[in-house]
Length: 318
Ligand code: VAH
Image 1 (cartoon, rainbow, N blue to C red):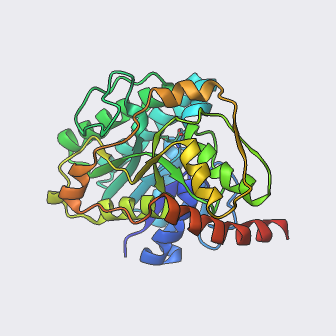
Image 2 (tube, helix red, strand yellow):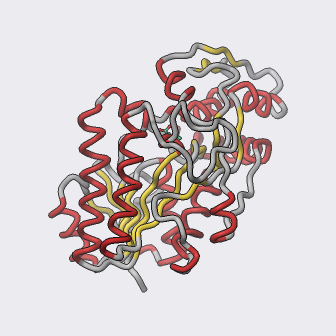
């Protein structure tokens, strides 16, 4: 059975992906790693402290556990990256290059690396953004993702590294708190609604963004990684999407379940980031190449979160 290393495993996506990968490969065969302490969701299996800017430390873990597959998620997200551009470039780029070089040197089986719709900028078509279109981002995070996509294609084409990637939209999950993303308002809003508090949204009411429920994001990631090589025709990164909504629309979806929920709008610097991104994405290449299909629409996602989040909150308060 292959051994899998997940970097950034304490993150919002990393926690849920680690849990799902352990169901597939077996708990002991999926090594979670991060610079933070292991959280409850991933603590039952192997965990290692890992700063992905340290190539030798990555090699040490790969040798110790005989790792052949890496899901490399560790990165600084958009809002945090704007506040610390040097760390964002170093972490997002040196981390990825370390993983790609090791994959080449050790002939690793397969690598996953997340890109983002943040690669797109103001000169990209806003609606149904195509797979192949200008990628002129106006954020540091977006710049690291454009550069990262080109490095992935280079290591595949020149050295045969089987690295695969998805341009995630905003990801929404309830099992762990997000960190530093521009789309993270769409997670916090559910916590405030359940607490009976008015939600102050840092984006404008009509700021439409492509989004995806976390279980769909985990499904897309594993579907892509399990596809046969001849199905993977995009070696920069695949557009994937599921739902697109505005803060007003997600608030209205919540009000169907919690009628007296209130939202107010206080846009901050993250509105400028969101304004540079598409409203919706054309992911027909992913759907035709390896059968991508999302399962959750906005109301189904809202119902699932409002049903399950109270249990997580109650457990955390114990
Ligand atoms: C962020 N959640 O907000 C990430 C994502 C499209 C946004 O890349 O930075």
